[in-house]
Amino acid sequence: MNELLENLYKNSPKLTQEYIRDVLKLTDHRAELVANITGGISLPETELLCKLVAQQRPEISLEVGLGYGFSALAICSSTPANEQRTHIVIDPYQEKFWKNLGLRHLNEAGYSDIVDFYPQKSYQALPQLLQDGVRVDFAFIDGWHTFDYVLVDFFYIDKILKNGGVVAFDDADWKSIRPLIRYIVTNLNYKVVGTLPEKHKRELIDIELGIEGSCIALQKISDKDNREIFFHKAFF
Ligand SMILES: C[S@@+](CC[C@H](N)C(=O)[O-])C[C@H]1O[C@@H](n2cnc3c(N)ncnc32)[C@H](O)[C@@H]1O
Image (cartoon, rainbow, N blue to C red; front, side, top):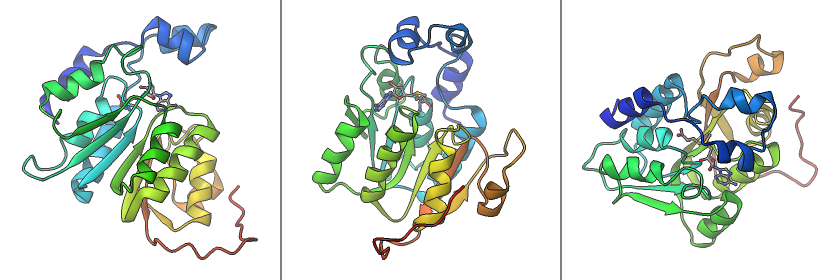
């Protein structure tokens, strides 16, 4: 693992009170619960991300949700330094609530030249990237976690993901995110290429689909969309 990423885990910066109140909108006992976390991906998630990126060797990668930069450091440090590449990062709150620390960590690790930062909400930046004709090989979704936002993130990422490209979802065991992954695997041209062990008892549908854990990676297996207007497969 990259030395700066290791230090980031040791240093374990906490979420700011303002972020918890103004963005997460938590004021009850759950505000206290999240006050002790970094908001970054866990070590097993980092290991999975590093493995996927090393296999994929993306020329262009993208992530939604920078925070302090745990996942960004994992993604940037997992391809050989001599390879030509770009990492697109989208986060509207990097300056206001994360004090630009994610960007600073990427800079200190020597990745500022390959990072292309968009300080917008993902539903604003992703359509722009599509409009600009950007195509990516790897994407990581870890922004706003409600079903509608993750669906919109995936919708646009699907449009710009190359055939054979991989998209990974963080917090893939959340109730808001798991149904979307079930939908993609049953209804769209994607196959599961990365999971982590499930923490709780697995649902039958997830066993059938081969999905589990807090980070799930899917590979696009065809660019062709042959669905007719009535196409729909049950996914729960
Ligand atoms: C869980 S944190 C990401 C942590 C990061 N992936 C890491 O491993 O360090 C979620 C991030 O999503 C960002 N975010 C919140 N709403 C967003 C939106 N609408 N579009 C893009 N990013 C968003 C937050 O500012 C925050 O940095």
